Image (cartoon, rainbow, N blue to C red; front, side):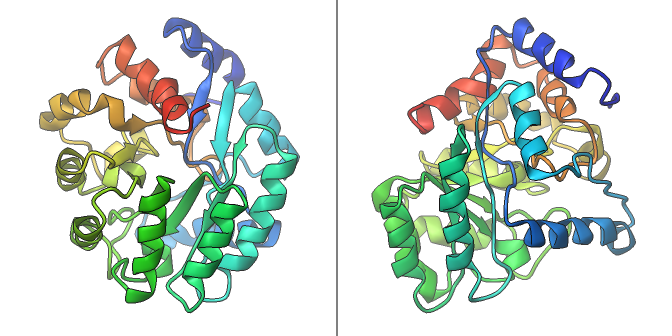
Length: 294
């Protein structure tokens, strides 16, 4: 996986090899500091929980984390934030408005939870200019088919605003993870611009099926194909052809800063799939540029 020595230089070399003007990363995490510290504490404990150590590579202050993304040539990124209980989402959305306003390059991100008032505050977030939403079915522990969320999915489908959703069962299955719950949501809202986080790891094949069935379903690369994930949940080689064919709906995601390896390793893991320069350019830049009209 390499080290962080001259990492920005290695990223520039990657950009040059593929004639890329920069990177569009749809899966980066920025959130209020006290919330982020709790997230880091969770990852510090994930080793005892799963048997796999998960060191945070970029345990830096907020300003430095933004600066690092710029050094890596990331021209647009998100602030993936998410509640784990009722009463958090509206507060997080308020923070996200302020963060996006003071952080050039950040795509204004918002979130939600199945609770009374969710439709109203999601509508408000859209009015405030939210360009992407985050839904974390695993951490939230909720059924995406909860009746309280049906109007939310409908609003996002109508507005054409993407929602990055952690709905796969990695790194550990939850009560409502896997393809079936989100499949039922899509059956009711087939125009929902859903971005499946982590390629749906480990249910890669099932989420590729959903992407083939619904033209507004996309997948992000977050942690997929890396040495870390290949050791736990390898992407099936037999699906590389479908992955190539769906290249126009695959988006770069990294999980920065909460990754146990250098940022450049995600890029090199995408590159070593051997799906060609045009595919790499589409995934790392053009698809995100087009989706968000950058």
